Image 1 (cartoon, rainbow, N blue to C red):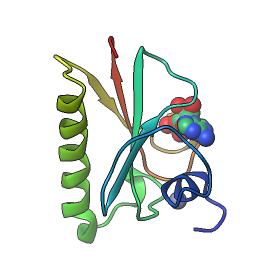
Image 2 (tube, rainbow, N blue to C red):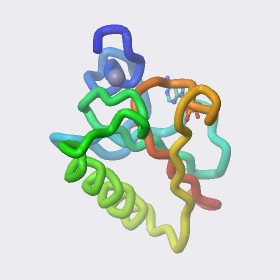
Image 3 (cartoon, rainbow, N blue to C red):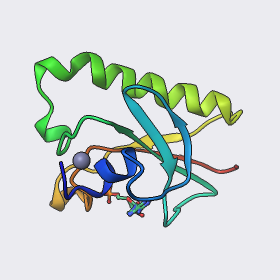
Length: 106
Ligand code: AMP
Ligand code: ZN
């Protein structure tokens, strides 16, 4: 998606503090952190929100959670919070699916 901020971050057309990336996912620091460590995990594939995932996205969404776990391990986190905002009424501001990872220490 040409005008999507997070697609452009994934393509590195917009700069961000990327902490992990692979073929399918990019993980970067939230610009307005709500915890000492606040990362966003996104698939490179543009999907609007959890409300837009389809049966064919099952494996991708499983891998998204495994990526969160992998990055948490890399940061030596004992515990952390994961959350999705879904839709404008659910607090979603950026219309490219993203999993928030929040932890009390960096
Ligand atoms: P949400 O409310 O779930 O859509 O969350 C969007 C998140 O993206 C917010 O926590 C913002 O602080 C974050 N955000 C917005 N623009 C950027 C950016 N350019 N780089 C990193 N994070 C961003
Ligand atoms: Zn996008």
